[in-house]
Length: 361
Image (cartoon, rainbow, N blue to C red; front, side, top):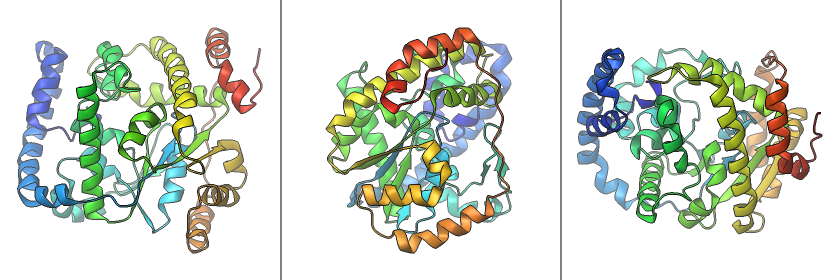
C-alpha cells in the first residue's frame, strides 16, 4: 500500500479494477483506506493544477539532468545522498515522490508536521531516511503514470505485465510517449520549485537510456556497479524485509529471486547496448568497492570525468557528512544457495567478465 499513497481517486479505481482488487474481501479494508486517501489527493491535485498548471507548462529545464544508474543495492541511494549535498543540484525528496501530483501545495501545508517526523532506518541497509532526503523518481512515476514495474510490488500476481515498463521495448509508441510526458511533467514541477540542475536516481533508468536520451540528448550519467554476488544477497534482503510487506497478496520469495536474476540480465543487456548512444564524457562508471574505499576521491573522479564544476566548494560539505557516518554498520547477509548461484553464474556471466569480478564455483 505504501507505494500507492500518492495516487488520485480515478487512477486508484482503474488500477484496482484492472487487478481485481475490489473483488477480494480480504483487501477491502486496505482498499477503502487507500480510496479515502486518493480522494484527498484528488482534491489537492485539482487545487494544484488550478494554481500552478500554467507555470508548470511554461517551465523550461535548461540544464539536462544527471542520472545515477545501477541495479538495486549497488550503492545508488548512497551516491544520490552524497551528491545531493552539493548545493548546485536539486532532487526529488521522499515527500515529493510519494506525492507527485500535490507536493507544490501540500508541502507547504504539511511542513510543520513533517519537520517533527524523525528520520527512520531503512531495514535493507540501515540508512537513515527523512521526508526531505533524496528519493527515486520511479516512485513518483508509479502513481503519476501507472507505467512502472513498481506496481508489481503491490500486485505480484501481475508483475510480469508491469515488467514491460522496465525497458519500454515491449510497449506501444503512444504508451512510451505518455510515460515521457508524465516524467517530464514531474521534472518540470521539481524545476519550478527549485531552479537547479536535477540529480536523479532510479535503478529502472539503467535499462532506459535510449528513452532518456530522447528527452534529454545532453544528459549525463553515473553508473555504479557492485560485486554481483553482494548485489544479489542485498536484493534478497530487500525483498524479504521490505517488498514482501508492500503487496495486496503474499509473495513467493523463491519466485521473486528467480525474477531478480532474470531482471538483472535484461537490465544490463539493454544498458550495455544503449550506453553506446551516450555522448563522450557524459557517462562515468565506478564500482561500489572503489567508492567505499575512499568516498571523497571516488566522487572527485566522477566530477572530473563528467566535467562537473564546483567540487572544491562541495568537498567540505561531503567531508562533514562522511565524518558523521563513521559509526554506520552494514548488514551482514547469508550465503547464496547453490542453485541460485548457478543461475547467477550463467545469466550474469557477461557482467562478471565486463567488470572483472571473479566467478565463484
